[in-house]
Length: 150
Image 1 (cartoon, rainbow, N blue to C red):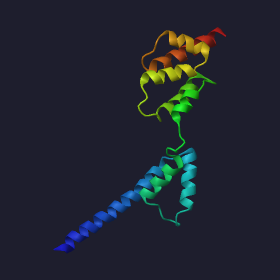
Image 2 (cartoon, rainbow, N blue to C red):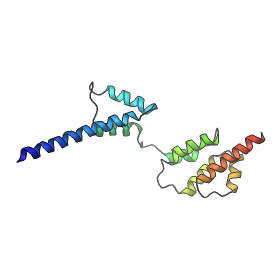
Image 3 (cartoon, one colour):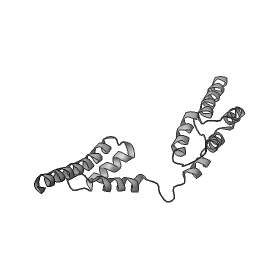
Image 4 (tube, rainbow, N blue to C red):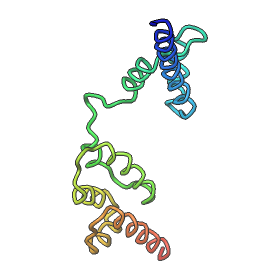
């Protein structure tokens, strides 16, 4: 009686192990830049031809790219200043703001506006934006206006 049931359980366990290895392979397909370089280095430490199990791989990724004890994205956000285009500043801002949990929209707007160049910032503040999308659009519009005047 146990023979058929035990075979099914063994097959299920084998499939689960294979799926966990597939997770690593599938994840590695989507890596690029620093993450891809890290992956290639990590794979060199594995026995030849063997893929790591998902749990160990996930732990290694988090150790390399996860939140560090000294990580303070709010501090970085408050110090962020526009040094190039509004679009570049917005990209840097977005990369930081998504790392902060429970940041009220009004605070995010204030941080965004504070980092803009003063000639753009003052004009955007005048409109009292209520969503993050509003200052993004207004800042780009003001940047284009200033560029056309120059």
